[in-house]
Each structure stands twice: as C-alpha cells, then as structure tokens.
Amino acid sequence: MIIDAHCHIGLGTYKRQTPEELLRQMDRCGVERAVVCPVDQYIAVYNREGNDYIAEAVRTYPDRLVGFASVNPWYGERGVKELERAVDMGLSGLKLNPALQGFFPYDEMVYPLIGKAEELGVPVYVHTNTPVYAMPFQVADLAGNFPGVAFILGHMGFADGWTDVVAAASLSPNVYLETSLSFPMPMLEALGKLGAERVVFGSDSPESSLEAELYKIRLLDLDDATRRKVLGENMERLLGGRG
Image 1: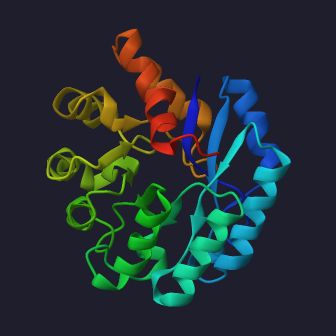
Image 2 (image 1 turned 30 degrees about the horizontal axis):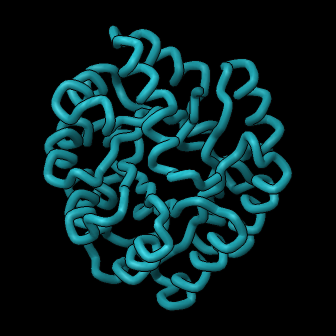
C-alpha cells in the first residue's frame, strides 16, 4: 500500500486543488490513500472553514482520503477547542505551518495545542525550512517537550535545512521525516542513520508532482522491506487506525 503523507486540497489564494484532481493523480500513480490538509488562508486564518472542507472531503472519499486539521496557535483556547472539534468530525492529525501562521515551534504559545493533540492521540505534521521559522532543530526542541506525540517533520528541511535534518531528528525519537521536496542524498542519510521506520513518503501535491516525488523514491537503492515502510507502512502505523 502507498500512502501519501502530505497533500493539500481546497481553493486558496496561491494553492488550488480539488479532491477529484488529487484522486486522479493518485489513481495514475497507484496511491491508495492520501493525507490531506487545507490551503493558504485556511491554514493561517480561517481554520474552521478549512477543517470543515477537509472533513467533507474525507466523508465523501473515506477509503482514499485521511484528513489533518489546521489550527493556528495564536487562537489560544479557541484553537484548542477547534482541534478537538475537528478530530470529533473525523480528522486524524494536526498540520502546523509556523511560517504561514507566524510562530516559532519552540514558543510555549503552541504548547496547549500540542497538549491537546497528545490527549487526542493524533500526530502533528510541521512544515519546515522557511527561515527563520520552522527550522529542523526548532521542531526537535518542541518534540523533546512532548515525547508522547509523533511529529512529522515536513519536507525533511528541504533546501538549506537538509544539512540539519538528520541531526535534529536524532535528538527526539518521536520525530519522523517526510520526503516531499527533499533530495535523494538526505533521504539515504536518514534511512541509514535513523532507520527505515523514521521516514514517510509525501508529495506536497499540488506544490510538487505526486509522480515526480514517487519517482525519487523509486530511484533509491532500497530493499523491498524498507521501500514498503517508507511508502506506506510507517504512515499507517502513525495514523494508528485513524482515517
């Protein structure tokens, strides 16, 4: 089974993709399921509307789509309640984008939201490497304060952050690395130093092409067991039966 750990759906200002457009890509590529989250302004400001859109898509395609809510930590207690509401609607994780939402991952402002994610038993996906926000060691610092939460470090610190990503993930065993936008070299380094259980495949569609991101994985010289873990088994385990 192939699970895409990170996609966006919705009609935003800069990023647009309908569930049906994503499903057509998935069918072309043999991807059974995809984790979907909101886009643009629905990540930054209009969280409730974005989460409702994701929940409706998951209800429409329950066997293909797994929803992650987006909540801006600046909303404080209202944001904590929104995450709880979203999970009650059937969403299976939390997506944070510190650069878009305007906070540093190590800021204690985010702690109540992560605490609620821990209480609900859902993983947390964090976009990385939009300096000065969202750098790998910043996410590792947050993860170290919440060892009971599975953190997915988005894009493996693509661009300049890739040099830090394996060292940062080594500090916190609850940090997993997602492959979208990354390069083969850090993927191989992560697999060699962290182990096959700590890497999950993602495409960041429509920011990148699902076909291209899958092709990068298939180019790597991996044994069948490692390939299965990266492409689906690890993410299925992180979801813990949700979605």
